[in-house]
Length: 388
Ligand SMILES: NC(=O)c1ccc[n+]([C@@H]2O[C@H](COP(=O)([O-])OP(=O)(O)OC[C@H]3O[C@@H](n4cnc5c(N)ncnc54)[C@H](OP(=O)(O)O)[C@@H]3O)[C@@H](O)[C@H]2O)c1
Image (cartoon, rainbow, N blue to C red; front, side, top):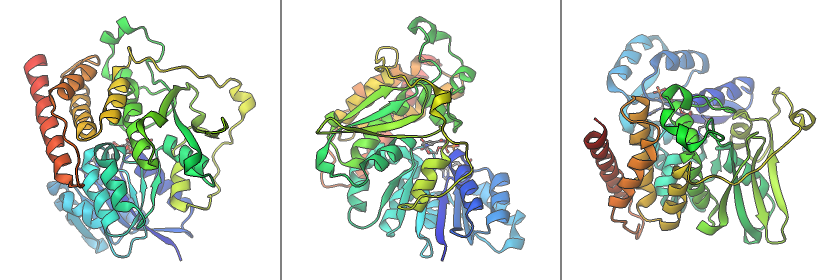
């Protein structure tokens, strides 16, 4: 019996890495459903290679084109957000790999959980926006298996331990391409510069998030909800080599870490095949060649996005959803060269300051969706007024 997968975001960096693992383990995994945004060239290749029964394309026009192109395959092709949700809740699926980028992944991720599917989650933004509610829905019903390398490392380090014995979760951060760049030079950073991550090859949005260190700001919130700890139990340490993927400190002072080469196929494999490990042919980690593993505190002055992430985590309520939405809007504006690199934290901070934080109450997702909409409008208003 193979484990039957639905892969949301199959044409992205995590999606492609996941299919690479599936390709090498066709005896263990089969692909029932694929969902993507608009890249139908790659999606068609994936359909012909992995023969899913169902596919979804967010973009309606592109979905129509794909139906015409692949009419020989007899695959049912859905579209829009409902299409991604349909793929996430297919009765014949055992595990959903959630790897759409951004808040667009919230509805499909929730749909998977509500349909009783285990979810391997790379898509961190839904956990930032609504982690408390997402984990509450999952609790006792389905597994939420972390794919993000830091959270996957923590998940591995926690295995076999009593959660009550945890003192602190320590997320490592590479520091991104501007770790050593003096603050006065940040004004000169171009889109091209920001897309050069020193250690990881990833999609454009998360690569810019790594450059601003908002990625780590989002990850502290993600960690809080995934592992059910309090805000003061989550901390960040900069580790430029990206070999130690994160650490757990226990009440007796022991620290357990997970190490490995920076390759997403390792955490993806662990989540796909949990609790068993999958053999691979990746290069082994040779610590004698690495030589030095170094650690330093994050600089919250040069990287205010990380400070904003910590603040949103501590405040909770609707603030993390506002942080996420404002970040998505500003990163998009930066990638389109409408704003400068330094404007990213400035616009996000102003959006956060304008927001009246609301508690989440009994868990109605509408409060979060309202905050998300409000933050997108507000951030875009600030961008248009100030920078156009
Ligand atoms: N890349 C990594 O190594 C990594 C590591 C840890 C965590 N993550 C997280 O994993 C998620 C994916 O990251 P990524 O780097 O793989 O992103 P990516 O390369 O930009 O891929 C994003 C995927 O989402 C799809 N998509 C975008 N909007 C959609 C929508 N509205 N409906 C359906 N599909 C949509 C894209 O489809 P099209 O290509 O067709 O537009 C693509 O398949 C992010 O949340 C990121 O933070 C990534």
